[in-house]
Length: 377
Image (cartoon, rainbow, N blue to C red; front, side, top):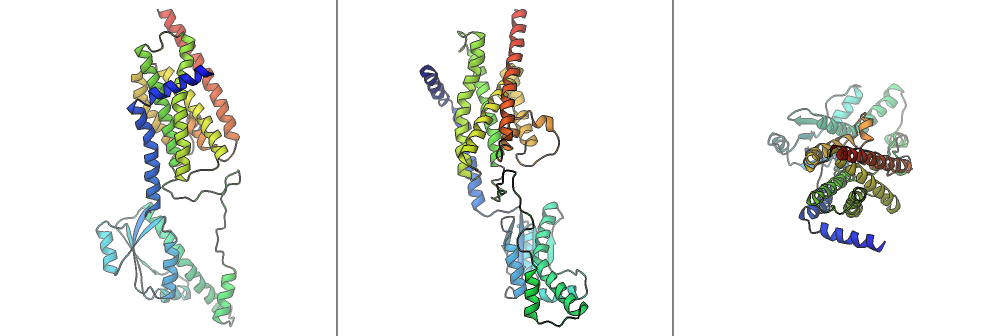
């Protein structure tokens, strides 16, 4: 045990003298810090120039209040007049301009009285897009409560013929209003869906891909030392075990950095669950990278395949978006299990099975290559 600890410390000391390894480790804290700072600042998937002709109007003030609740998704630029709002769109400073007229209440009232949806707010856009369509849904959501009340009032008074004062009518309307969401989204372990900044949402997936990069870096370092004759005094079996130990040292450093970075980023569940998931994921990455190293055989082939594997992992596994299908490919990649293991223990079992299967497959493939090499010589 003492010898193993000494070798671990010596190999770690040797690794920290490699500038490439230090660079890989430093990427993560800088990335998380940058995303954290960006999330604390102004953010939004779309920028809207906003102008209201009469901000003191109660209806206009209510609409503005509802719009500002979505400032994490839409970045608003307050404008002094309509010309400024339109100019920001023309000069590419804003994606759209929303102009709320002075008689917004009158327009809503007329639409309700005539039972049709006439234009209420002027929207100026350079082009139509999915993001702008989404932003218009937010605008409609802000307008609808005022429009629906006028519809309700018109129906009660005109269609039903009920004589009721405004205070009683408003109270009756408010009593049946649903202010909170109709749906509560939870994971199957009972934890509520994280509503943190969308900029921090892909951090865990990006760190998972980064840890895979560390595993491949470890595989390439081993192949480099193997070419230099560092392991010539070892038997074939010892060299096979050493390849796993060599990579385990690198991944042990990487997994510590990953867990700490997740804690600093705010994308965290609880320490026991995070540690178990991260350790199992590191073991999966270890056997996967070792298996790919055995298949490739040379640093040149591994270096050629590395970008394809990392990009494929980012696309196939749910790092930025979840893609339906490709289930076979997903289950070959360790990040798939890790990103699904955070809200239950089912994927811990699958990761344990993955590790055992990958080790056996690596051993079988290594024995075949070793036998082929001996027969060829």
